[in-house]
Length: 79
Figure 1 (cartoon, rainbow, N blue to C red):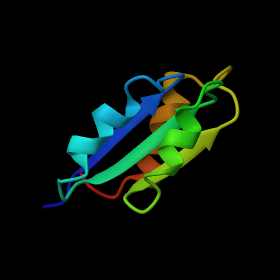
Figure 2 (cartoon, rainbow, N blue to C red):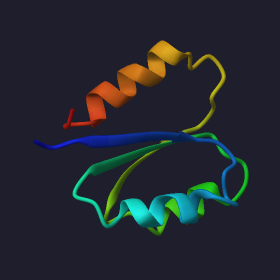
Figure 3 (spheres, one colour):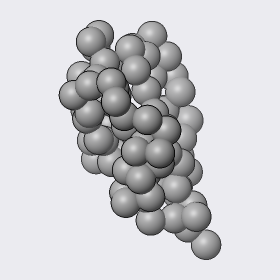
């Protein structure tokens, strides 16, 4: 059975590496939605590009919980 880990981040440069690194040793699909971060979060996430599916949103305004869930449903293939 395959599982997906779906994470939404915004301006998380201080924690994103230490949070994602342990997940890389799993067999789970990892999907990260960067919600328009203005710090180095996007740059740090792009270093993981071989192992994670990165979705960059330009802006979080107007992107409600339902829209975020629809993105996750389209991009994740696990349970």
